[in-house]
Each structure stands twice: as structure tokens, then as C-alpha cells.
Amino acid sequence: MELNVFYYPKETGRHHLKAFLQIMNGKPLIINFQGETLHRRAYLRLLKDTYYLPATPIGLEWAVTYPIEIKNLGITKLKYQIDTQALEALNENNYDFRIFEIQNPEGTLAANDTQYIYTLFRPLEAKEYAVDLPIKISDIEGPSPHSHVLKLRGLGHHPESESERPEEVKFYEDLPTCRAYVGEEGQLAAFSYESIDFGDLEPNQVSNRFVILYNLHQTQTLKFDFQKSGLMCGDNLKLEPMSGELEPNSHQNIKMTLIPARFPTHFEGEIQCSIDWLNQGEEKAEMKSMHTSVVVNEQEFLFLRLKKRTKFVSFSFHF
Image 1 (cartoon, rainbow, N blue to C red):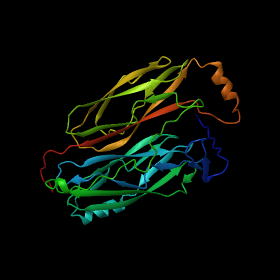
Image 2: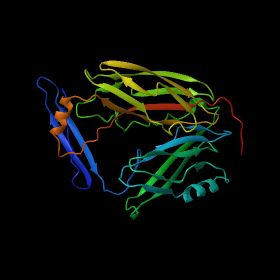
Image 3: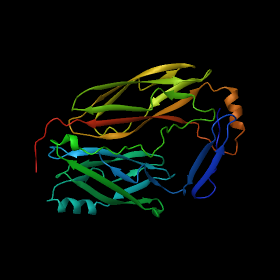
């Protein structure tokens, strides 16, 4: 069974709808729908309200790099600038040690563009660090009326007390399990796994994973293309193949090879695979004619969630 829900953006604001679904001889379900209609101006999106970085041992030679995804949901180019005064004050209050750093505190994003803010964390003591950084947004019309704050939380722990290391806060705990953008006929392309964990890796330690891409359509050929991403922040991710075509009702094995760089990185996020359908038939064209009042983006996407942590094997205390 497939249910189609349409959301028409007529006025700005957030909208909520609670629906009750009763299936004969089945369990009743309550479905909560949420939608948000944005202004036509540039609009920056952060996935999380607060970012809890994985617990990091003290005494590292190099800071750990952690990418934070940002996206422009508006229709015009935006410029962002992170106010780092609070960050500099925190570092100054910790013996001028560089606890936190932002590698790219300012930049531009085109409409619908996704980039990453690269946060560096290197704890000096076994304690919790917290800093809130305002983000200024502007577009062609001037400063944005929306306020954004990048909230960073980092925790340092002693490497010899590994058993006492706090449990890591799950990044996707409050986010949907699937973020595929599908067409009008439902999800006819799918991965065998939605989440890939490369594990805890030492520098240059190769990790291989496999995922299968399925074309579930009975008549249409699928064309796929993995988009380049800055998520890996220096690590080398190789996909074989990175693009190609799939005949109807077939599949393709995708080999994923990750080679960590010299510098430590923790990342957890998504890479995007665009899906195009070739030789579209009359049936799909007829379905589109039923929604002539709706502007439909024919591009479909699938997402793979990737996770990697650096394995720390030795420590030299540098202050």
C-alpha cells in the first residue's frame, strides 16, 4: 500500500497535522505530519540544535576535525559569517590553548547548496567544554531576519581511563531513519543498507564496505551518480563504480573504500546519489498530467549515511 501526501506552500510558517490511520484487522496508527514553508530569501539550515562532539582524549598532537553540515534552503545565494569571539574567549581562559577552532568561519552557499563547517577540537583537560557561536546570514537583500547559533559541546577524557569514557550521544537519534527524495511512483530505487559504519580507524588503515543499489522498476532504466562531498574532511573515500546505469529489475554492487588521512577526523553524515530515469514511458507522463498545478522536481535522490571515528593508539602530551 502506498499513500501520497501533498503539501502546498501557500504561506510562510510551520504547519502540523495529526492523522489517524485505521487498517482493517490491523493496528491503528497516528501519523504526525510537519511542514515548513520558507521565505523566498536565503535560509540556512543546521541539522542539529546542539552538536555533541565524540569524547576526545587529552594530549593529542593534532586536533580532531569534525564536519558540520549546512545547507541553503532558499532560492538566492547566501553569505554566512560565524562570530568567533566566544570561541577566542574560551581558548584564552584555557591558558591560550586552542581548544576549539573553526577552519572556515565564513563563506557563501548557492541556492540548495550543501557545505560543511570544519570544527577542530583538542581538549586540554578531562572536562566538558561548551561554546555558542552566532552565525550572521545575508543575501542580495541584506542581512537575514533569521538568527542561527552554532552550539558546540566537547568532552575531554584521560586516555588511560578508557573504561570511564562517556557514552557517545547518537547523532541521528532525533532525525528520520530515511531521507530519500522519491518521485511520484514511490521509491523504485533503494540501497541494501542506509547506514555504513567504517569503524574506528588508525591513519592510513584501509576499510572496505559494500552496498547494493537496486532498480525495482519493471520497465525503466536507472542512471545513478554519486555526488562529491566534503563530509570526509581529508579522508579518501573511493566508490566503485561512482556512476552508471541499471537495467530494469537489476542491481549493482558498490564497493566503498575509505583511506583515513594522517590527521584525526570524526565524521557522521550523508552522501548523496542522484537518480534519473531513462526512456520514460507514457504511463509516467500521464501521471504527471494529473498534477499540472504543482511544480515537480523530476530529480530523485538517495542518501547513504556514513560514520567513521579515528582510533587513537598513542599519545604525546603537547601544551
